[in-house]
Image 1: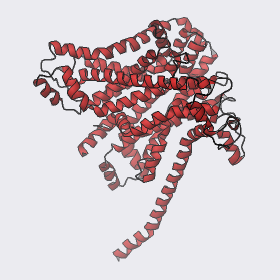
Image 2: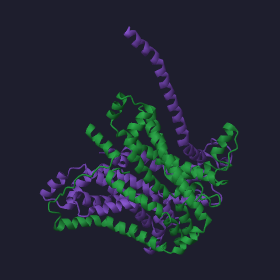
Image 3: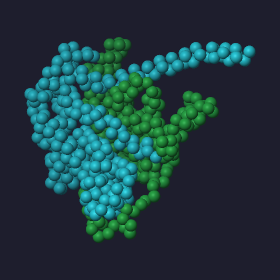
Image 4: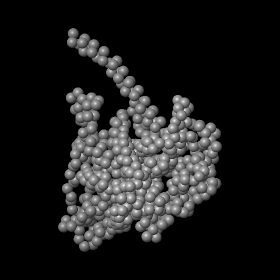
Length: 296
Length: 307
């Protein structure tokens, strides 16, 4: 008797359970579609406008009527007066990115080595300074920073921007290095010390090689920060030859006759390198970003 | 494995003490070692003094004149900017964080297509801010923008000029842009937090009969609460300093009605050529910022949650 009742219950519950599962699945798919449209709309708009001809931009199309790659070609060959120095500006962005990355890695790893591995007395002061810099919004420091750069004689100089980016990238570097450094046994340093290695040798031969994953994560972060940043580059760089791509792009926007298709083509070319780097190093980056959140 | 995940859950739910400090060289650093340790810190200390301490002090000096503040408080544009900033932070940040909390639960589903969707969903965070904000600026154009064109094609609705007719529509567009850009980032962070919650807790809750909402209310949320709080505070500070969103989406318009403190400060300094007024504008955010910074510094130091 009891067997039958158990069977009966299962038999009546199964379809209801299946129905509920199908309903949640349908809701999930609906949510996914909404998310997809929401996420891709501005990016689709960018691609659409870049593929349009100048005349088609000012129509009510929701897809390019006469798709053409001419916009990209114009940017790549610098054949529009606003884009005269495009490759030069692209080079400036690269230069700032490369310099910021290397200086951030060097300064950040040296400081973390001294505080975390050599246990410098009062090293926590440095950690706190880094933490404080991390939570001060960069845009709030912009005005006095600009005045000071004028005083240092660095106005319209790429190095002013590099210093600014390094200032805001090193705090993050110091966190990640210290967090990651905890997982490297200090006995390695001790053994090397006993064998007579100097602090510089310990730093170069033991610390840096073992920190490679953290160096990659922070390097990617610093590179993207410098490449994507706008405000400081806009303030500190004013001549067309010293400008970076985002500054030139924004200048485009303020011109009277904004050629939207060329602008969007420029925007896409500017966005491709960081997106490629992001997806290539995604796991490392996310690991760096969430290291503290996930580890015990 | 399980012990580390338990520790992770503990670190997320309550402040944990940092590891006991160990000294590498007993008796402290000596002689040349001490010199080396100092030499290694000097580059960072120099950066900090030259590019953080000096600008901060210089800024305080630029904005020390009390008359600047009476000038600000009698300016209706400034007062409107303060209201905008509060709305932008209060609504923008909270909607974004709450959405991220819910969506991180959605992305815990283990099917192949949610993994693919996550890759697309993080795109706004991966793409540099400027191109997408310019794109959104054009997309919301009342006459030729993609949004109104789509509304017309699908529903025959004549959409409004989102950015240049009303302050509230424009401010709403800025908030939507903010959510679009930053929700993916915080979703990833909270997703990592959720993944650190040990499965055993859910199994135990299952045995006790907790499902759905109860599982969330009694297991997930208590363990995520601390992380959620830190993320919200951090995001509030970051958003307070956000310049690009307002600058590129509305440009502060229509009629200077959608400025926030960060953009108004830069406008005062560079377009109106009153750097002292610009600094004062930014400094007037200090009463909000200082408590936030103090709470965050304490939280970040003790919980080992780092972003």
